Length: 355
Image (tube, rainbow, N blue to C red):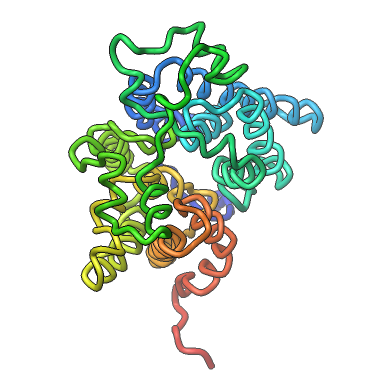
C-alpha cells in the first residue's frame, strides 16, 4: 500500500488570494478622493507636499534595500502609501525640507530599523508626524485658510513651488489673509482665555455644514471628512480592514465627548465637533487599522480602538496639543504586544481554566 506524501507547514493554511501590493493599492485608491479635494482646497502646495513626502519615502526605502543587499520591495507600494499618509497629516504649506525629513524618518526609523515591512512596532507615517510636530512646531502649526485659495485667488504652480521652497511671503501672498487657526486649536486657545466654546468657534466663523464639506483649516487629511469616510467604507467593503478598530475608536472618543458636553456645553464641544474636525476619521479608518501595528484578534482590536479614541479625547481636552490622534495611536501601538498576549484565543481542545 502506497502512502500519500504529507506536507507540514505553519499556519495559516489558507490564503485570501490578495497580495500585499493589492492591499496597498486599495488603500491608496481609498485615499485618492480626499487627497484630490485637499488639492482643490489648498492648491498646488498640497500636491507638492504629497509628491515630496512620497518620493522621500520611496527613495529612502530603496537606499536601505541597497545597503542591506535584499530584494527591492518598492513594487509592494508600502513606501508610497507611507508617504501619502504622512502628507495627509501635514499642513498644506509644509516646507520641502520638513517633508523630506519626515519621509526619511518614517522609513528609516519607523520601518527599516525594525527589519522592514511587517516588523515595525509603530505606524511609520504617524511616528514621523509625531517627530516632526515635536521637532518643528512652528512649521507644523502654520494653517492656511481654505477660502482664500478658491476661485480667482488660487495659487499658481510657480507660486506653489515658491511656497514650499521659500515660504508664502516669497510667493507674494499676504500671510495675514492666508493664516487661520484650526477649530480644535481656536477652541483650546480661547477656552484658556475664559471664553466659551461658542465664542471660540464664532471667532473663526465655524460652521458644521462648511466643515463637513471641506471648508476648514487644518492638515490635508482634516478637510475631507465625507470622502475619508467613504474611503474607509470602501476598505470595509473590500475586507481590507474590519469594523472593530475604526468603530471602537470613534466610540472611545465620542462617548466621553457626549458625557462632558452634557455636563457643561459651554466648556466642552459636542461630539459632532470632535467627529468632523481634526484627524479622527482618518486615524480611525486609515491609521489605527494598520495590520502590522494593530492587534490580531477582534477582541484586541476593540480594546485597542477604544483606548485610541479615549486617549484622543483626553489629549484634545486636557493635553498640551489641540489634536491627539497621532499621539494616541502611537502610544497604543506600543501596547499592542500586551493586548495580543491577553486576548489570544484558547488553543483548540484546551480549557480556558488554568490548572
